[in-house]
Length: 183
Image (tube, rainbow, N blue to C red; front, side, top):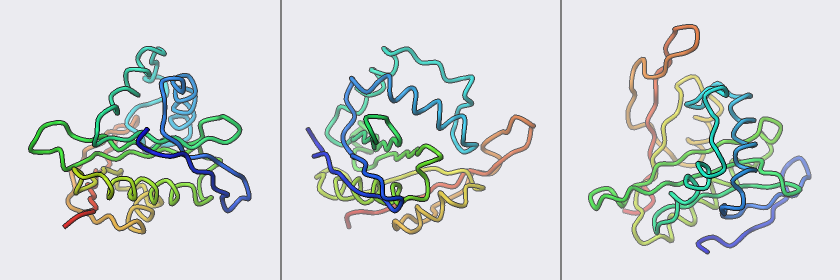
């Protein structure tokens, strides 16, 4: 186990557990992902495109099974309410970097859960001997996400113009942000 489970109380007074995901969480992760996709315009897939099998999801969970990766979930009453992935690169030239992704069910946003997930993930990453830089990408219109990332110390490194295409044919820029956790 790379991460010891923690129990926290959020701003809404509800208790949640933050822990490492296991293959037994596959079904709950699929259900949570469908909720994220239904309620957010800032994820890469549309809800109708997301149809993994339990085996697909199990393999995705296993993709985090290396020394510089961590897949966290937050649960309330045994229901997955948030997913936080730090997927480490495996090529030697990139093992010091990590791609970060976070998703929180709509009804659990603005409760302090995102901050708690970031704080714990960053603490784990700083203790990891290989990791030096955390990276993420964000839709330029996702103001709440960008505010959270800046609050956690991430800085904008670049922008890809017209990167995301919307259902209506418009475009949204992609912002690349990083946090250097070791000098």
